[in-house]
Length: 150
Image 1 (tube, rainbow, N blue to C red):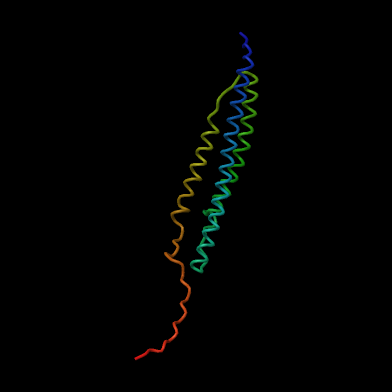
Image 2: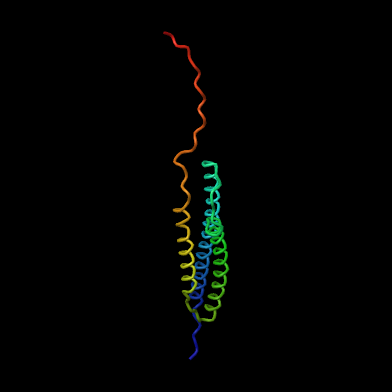
């Protein structure tokens, strides 16, 4: 029994759905890269703010810090783009062959990694060294002595 070729309109819809799926993964990758960049830069901002307010260097963990978390998100976003392009091409050929096989592996991998990186960001927010309640005030100029009239 041979497979009957699909009508041209069905194949066109399948290819368009494949492109939309690829574009959704591309948007996800861009978001991961953007979040990574923002987290890394926000960590640097908080360090500078603490230095300015306390006049002290803050102790930063060499491994578990916002810069490393941000870089991890950027790298993961780039990897997701590469995997999405590979998956797009794989699905394209499966559609052409009439042998499409869905795969949830990529979805589960991305979900787990984003959950892990998201969970790692919670302590960075909660365990940050507390800043003083108010900034040091500028020294007050001494008041001049006024002549009192008795």
